[in-house]
Length: 413
Image (cartoon, rainbow, N blue to C red; front, side):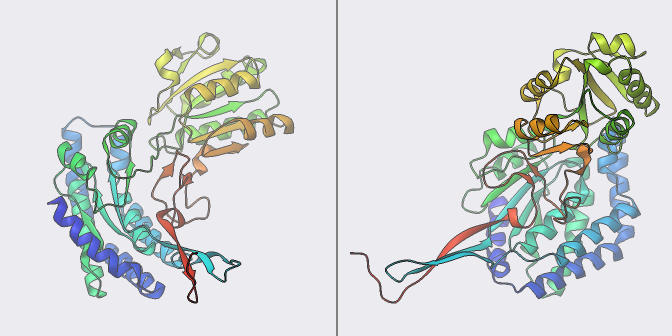
């Protein structure tokens, strides 16, 4: 089954690789209209998925990620139109030079080919992946989690019909309907058909793909993100930032999971932020200093410092200075997004220079690590590795390059 899907995707990718930008944009806008026209069917399929997940005992942030509403469906359609409005990176010549022998050598941005994406229970990823890959000139094979399979199948069928109505192959986007683990493992070995594989989900999924894939992988998304409140911080500003970073949407990879507080603020800021977090129903797991000053806080374990909760839970620790904060982050960070709240310019610059992450903030919430928020349009995920792409992966990061050489009969002596 996967081999056949791979063959169809390769054929579709040939068509997409030379498709003019206006035709790609028209197809994306048509797909956005089709998504909204099928609103009732898509929401009904999603309702069935959510009910099945609840019956299976799933709850909390996972259900939030799985659930589609009219507003979220509208946002998916708006995202496709936004991608259509973005500059097309395909075909851009990045450099050109003439050698002494007269050869003209340039570098040009080209489509990746066929991209595979393995993800969990976020139906919006289906639309984001389709839109970005199509605009970047690549076909995409999607493998979502079993909890969202009904929703994903319906959304992909809507996209395929819209593509065919535009005279394009429906195989530009395909969904793997078998959600067994072995099918995912087989997809990781689809060499010759997949040019790139992107996992998007929790730590377990990402590690499984990284460890078992024979297809090139871009590692995304695990976010044990920290906010460090420095001794010079504006405390009201710090409260706003921490509350937003933790509670605005706790089930996403750029949410704050760990709070570090300078020891000079333990008697002032800890009670303040503790109360604000608890008013938002956040469980606080803290060190001895935290538990002594925040009623209801529970003792943190070593495991807590390394945990991406994706829930209304935060680990909190008092540190003696910026050095200890940076060392803590170096030890436990997943390299996603890290923030300092400070009014000290020197400390801000040290934090920016010494903290190794895809996104490093001064006096702002980690929730901004997002392609749309950065002005890139929709994204396929946040890369936490250092090769090819790092940070929000938009259109440019879904392409590759090739060298183009113009000659006039030159031969190598």
